[in-house]
Length: 401
Ligand code: FEO
Image (tube, rainbow, N blue to C red; front, top):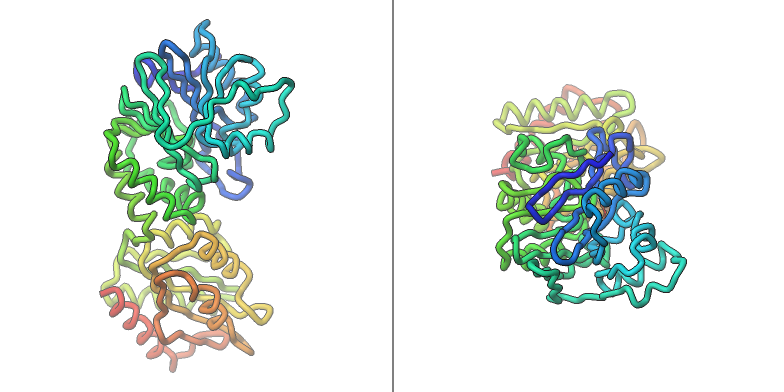
C-alpha cells in the first residue's frame, strides 16, 4: 500500500523508513532506525531524486507508482551512488527504459561498478557538471558538485523555482521518520545528538569538502532542505547550517570535558571518576564520561566532535593501548578530528607505556595539544597520588579558561 506525502504541490516524498536494521553501513547502531529518502518532482517532466535501500524495494515501487499516478518517469537524478540510495536504480532504469539519467561523470563511471544492465544505457545519460541547469517545465534544476560529501561522485541539486536543495547525505540524520517528515513537526533540538553522530561518523573526515559545499549554499536562497536521510528541513535551516559550520571546521560546541576511559578491573575507572569529581568541584559543567568498552565508539566520536577537552584513561594491554581504547583512537584519527586538547591517564601494573602510545597516535592531528602532565598509576590510584590528580584537574581547568 502506498505511503507518500506531498512536500509541495509538485514534490512528493517517496522515502521508506527502516526500523529492523541493527547496523547502518554494517557499523553504526541505529536504535531508532533510519530513513532512506527519495523524492518525486511532478512538473511537465517527472523527476525522481535517488532511490532507497534494496530491502525497501516493494514499498518504494508502490510509492513511486502512486506518486506518478499513471505518468511516465522522465528523469532520474542520481545525487549519490552509495547503495543505500542507489540500490533500486537498475530496476528503475529497466522499468522506464527511456528515462534520462542525470548524474556526475564520476557517478556514471561508478554506476557500472555496481550494476550490469540488460540493454545499452549509454544514450540515457545526461552527464552534468557544476552549474549545469535542467528545465523540467516550471522548475529549473541546478546541479552542484559536492565530492567527498560523502563519496567522490556526490552532487546536490537546487530547485530554483521552489528554493529547495536536494542535499544528498549532507544535513541528514540517523533515525526513522515517524509520520512527521518535517523538522517543524518534531522537537528538533532533541534530535541534534543523532544529527551530530551521523555527521561525525559519516562525513566527519571531510570537513574541507563540507565547508566547500556550505560556501556554495551561502549564495542560494534555501527554503527547504531535502536530505537523503532524516527530516525535511524548513524551520531549522540556519540552525543546522550553524552546526555544520562548527563541525566542518572542527570547532567544539562545548567548552567542557569528555572523559573516555577503559578499565579491566576498575583501577583506571576509579581514577577517571575521581578526576571527574575533581573537575566538577573546580566548576566544570556538563562533563561527559564513557566506558569505551560499553558504548559504541560512534557515540563517543560524536561527543569528541562536541567537546573541547578530551581525557583518555587506559590500561596498558599487550604492551600497548587497551584494545577498545585503541579502536576509539583509531576512529578519532580516521575521522580527522582537529583542534582539541587531550589529557592522559595511563595505567600499567608493570611496564606501563600506553600514555606515550596514546600521544603518538594522536599527535599528528591538526591543532591538537596535550596537557603536559599525564597521570600514571600502577594498578590503582594511591592516596599519595591525589595531589597529582588534582594537579591534572587544575591544568585542564586552566586550559578550559
Ligand atoms: Fe546515505 Fe553516503 O549514503
